[in-house]
Image (tube, rainbow, N blue to C red; front, side):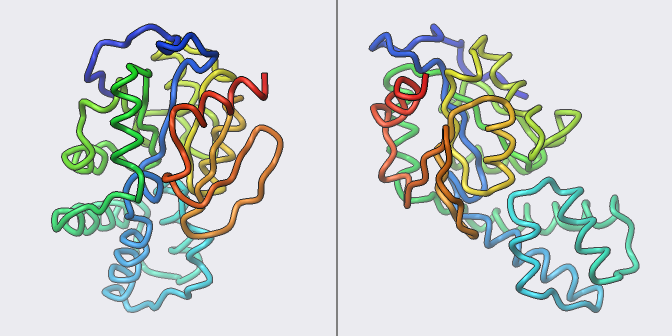
Length: 233
């Protein structure tokens, strides 16, 4: 994890019940979920295997170990999980070196949260080496902390990453809003007790208690996140 700016008060300037905002990375802030699938398809093609498009929904949003392990199992590829993890991260890092497109509304939302000194954390299942590259585009200064998938004992869909982020900021999970794009990430945030805004990127996500589903980050701002907390507490 990194701490890039001093953590301000755990209450917003408006004195609302919102204590912190946690944001996923791939598919939520940056349009990279498709990149991961392309990289996986390329690596497995090199290994002599074609990926079935139906497997995409299975691997999206999950930790590298789960996604890579699943693809080894279904293809029967002759490669170990550690070897495949290195290949995928190497290929993905090379891919994002050509540019990382932001999701619509991402830059505006991050700027608004920063302007109001809302404590934020980037919480991703991606490894630290990947997060650090993407932060070159997002801006490290936009986040109070960042949590990578290889820095917690159990990553998404387990609650550990979000519980860790809340602890770093001294916030109550129930007063933290999480923005996620996959069912895996939503499950992690909800297991931690956070309130969730789901912005589906690949597979649909149904609304549920404590969860709001929107079509784009263009629909999300500080007022929206504040209301999400106050109306559910």
